[in-house]
Image 1 (cartoon, rainbow, N blue to C red):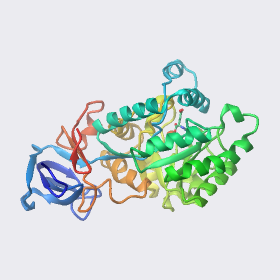
Image 2 (cartoon, helix red, strand yellow; image 1 turned 120 degrees about the horizontal axis):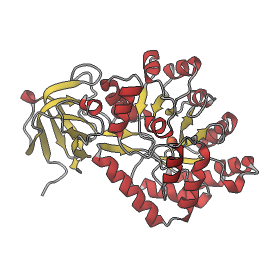
Image 3 (spheres, rainbow, N blue to C red; image 1 turned 180 degrees about the vertical axis):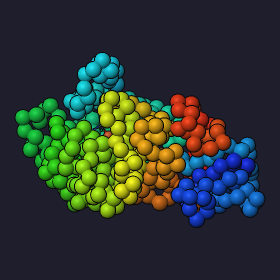
Image 4 (cartoon, protein in one colour; image 1 turned 30 degrees about the horizontal axis):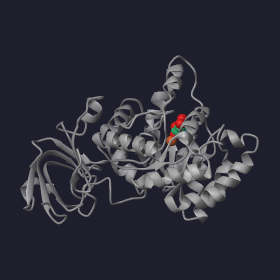
Length: 393
Ligand code: NIG
Ligand code: FE
């Protein structure tokens, strides 16, 4: 029987991305002909195979690449139903708008806890098979006190990175009185949700919540011990990014429509710019400009935004391929953003890197290098995944 203290040596790794520049080359801390030792749920050692310590058991990576498990720092996985018809109509020319969220709200309210749980588990499994070992997920399709709290309760059984998004849209029942909905989100709903969440988020956008409403909501969340992150500047220019920086949000997410001032503000802050190219792909929208953010010195994360409306993909490798092809990222930058960048967007240092003391979350690729994630788009290259030291795939 394997106990938590047993050690596993993964050896004969052709190319190892550690994200630890003190261990290997460049920002990715790349080590060729490498090995990793896992002890229990943590990394005990990483470096050149010739220097590896002995371990209880060994796994031969056969010259293939090993990377940190992906950190998907933005998803919306507690929902029911899908929006196939909406996607189909969009691909015939209808534009995306925040209004489609109502369809999922109705389906989610009507679902049982067991249905929501089964749906969530299915997408998590799908993501894990594609190398995701940490994910953040949000409420936002309940929009009543009970439905938001249950979404967070269900999510928190699967991840520590749970986000209260009662302010996704103003639900139809409050269409005539948005101020009363903001009062609910910052009052009874916040009281019911705060115990189940780490983060608070607002969809700051025309048709959702304006800058003043977003500031009120995020400030109330902060007072309850939740830390802010914001859906900002997705569909249009707006105040979201500046507000994120003002409130020291961990992340401003989407960042598709940015002024020079927005880029500067991000570059001079500890707020990560999280880019979600699955959304631009699935809404045929303009790509976010990762190059501009990176050249200015901003920290960039790359995540899926997996949700049934604007981005129904759980695949980080797909997002990496899009970011490299269409957003000006190098394959190295895209991989960093999908691992260490996601960790930064969650203000974590114990994930997203393969370095002594970090969680043993790693993916073996059926490829000699991580560059193949962009070079071979659409190919299922993840062939094994360890999460917290356990082989899951
Ligand atoms: O991140 N922007 C707001 N929320 C989601 C879309 C949700 C939906 O369309 O259901 C997003 O793109
Ligand atoms: Fe989102």
